[in-house]
Length: 222
Image (cartoon, rainbow, N blue to C red):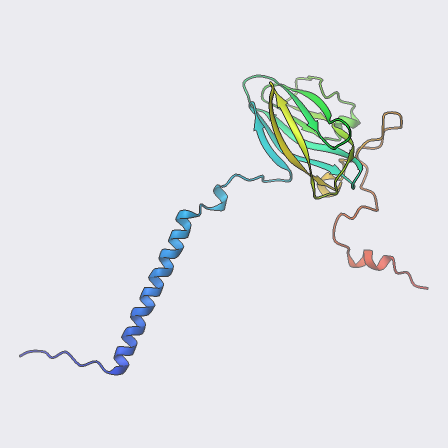
């Protein structure tokens, strides 16, 4: 006795076609996603600066978080950067900031082996620490100030680092003296009394979006 295959109705054929089409579309989508992951590496595998500022490396010295702090265009600025000497020898680092002021502002620093230097630390001004003084500590502080910054906050200025005749340049973004950089304020010229390195930013500097209280404070009644 032979079993007969039941005949498919038009409704059965329609459902079968729809299921086959859905399976093809699903397979294509899975292959497409898989292809994207193969040809586009995950973002976390790409090098990036985890903090503000630019970074580079030169002659065994890691140069991190390079930026310029200034309240506005043509105002004095302070360089902020961290230099970590992970090389096998002490390093003499020359730092040059070109702000179109006739000649670049340049200073040299000595960084012992396995030590770091924080340029733009207010402690260097408050404690009158010499930038070339080797105190033998694992962390040193220094101060590099330029007479004026010719660009508005948000733009960049070129900064060049030189070690053993080798150069590395980065574009340092200009930030306002706000939030984490509120204490990085330029000092007064040598002929004038030194300004407080821990002074708060000027009231005229807008460090964030205006709040309801600040916007209504200027609309006095009467």
